[in-house]
Image (cartoon, rainbow, N blue to C red; front, side):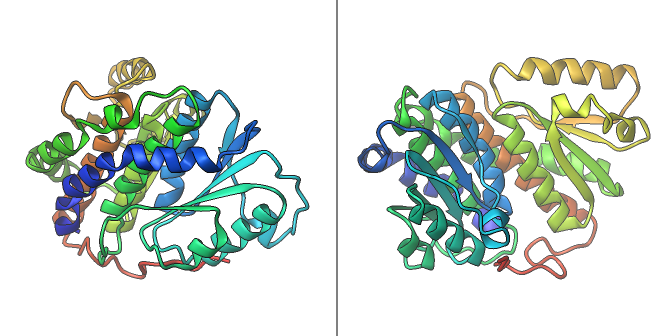
Length: 327
């Protein structure tokens, strides 16, 4: 896991360099007019899809959402997909329900773009355009470099749909920021020492940062067995805040955008109630999408450090496999 995390600056630099070419390829297949964009994924890729959903709706000016694969694999829904774009994310390109859902919606009129780390996978035959993350083989069970690579490709994809900034500009400072974060493991290790004995954790973010909160919670849960839940800061104000007041610590993930004001307000409230809160720093001066991706790397650091502090192996968590073949 540590070795694959260390490869992220190089992977991200490659993706930033080819961003203009990827954006041009996306523009050649996008439906005109575009009715909307729907993201299809599971696991860490589903957290990346949340990030893509925010960017696509924000920059394309058309509705975006998340697909429910069981509508097609279990309910065999008959849906008119003409004018819609589906973005299917799968690190392995081999998840059966992702492949079959792509085939179903493509047959019903959708244009489908696949994002995967495996160019020769089954996903390639089920989509109109395949974008590879080019991250190299990933052997640790927790996905790291493939996730941040997906996020970078989603910046490019979303920018190609409408009025977003040039993807090369958004991604320009990202490799250096991720390298600086990886060179500074101290904050994550210190927090892991402080929290090594916890059995539950809430990870809160909002806006684009919500995706980083979800991914951080997943990484902590799968590497340590801690019951970690990612959620929107807005949702935390409702019933789940009772768990915080009962002692569950909260990790606040700042995305570097307008939603950070909500995180600041939440922290004031939690501090006033003597709840256990923390945040991890990322380099300053980044575009919001790049800051969110860097925050995901901080979450990876924390998950690895917590696992080691608890005597667990972050590379191969018990009872988990690299590819989960949901159908």
